Amino acid sequence: MKQPLHRRQPTPGNPRVQRTRNRVLAVARELLPQVGPAGLTYALLAERAEVTRQTLYRHWPTRAALLFDLVLEGPDLGTYPEPGSDVGAVATAWLKSLRAGVSVPAVRTAALAVTAQADHDPDSARALVRIGEDRYAGFNRLLEPSGVQISEDEFTLLYGPVLARLFLDRGQVTDAFIDAVVAQWLTMLRRADAPQDSQ
Image (cartoon, rainbow, N blue to C red; front, side, top):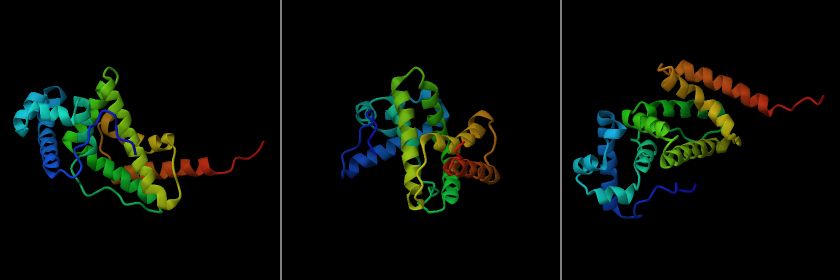
């Protein structure tokens, strides 16, 4: 998968650089829910992480790049599913991992901030597209043992109800809700794969 254009990778094999990067992201995860996206300035982050602002800009040239990494490099919750041949089981496990990921306050705040800024900030718009591309490609990798690959529209129809419940309805995503979403989604996939009657 190609790397986002606005995201600079640390020097490979340099543990000191990776430690600095991890420390900054940990501090940013701690600060973001407290101060909000507007309050998470590079001056504050540099002070709390005990690095220079130049170091921050070297890793994250824009705040959108920092928010992007906060979403995609969140804490390891141990819930990301393994590839599998059962499409329904993979989809269920993936939605549960999505639910766990957005339950982390910093990840949730970063994702909402990137989304809110995307209409007027090109860096945020690119970050939002890249987050979607990363998750879509990752989900199709999980499905490889099944021989099934889904379209972007089919992917949106899977995760859309979960994000709508969380962010629009402000409701709980229960296991029963996830089971219902996956059951409807599988029905839609079967219909799409069924041969069409010729008229």
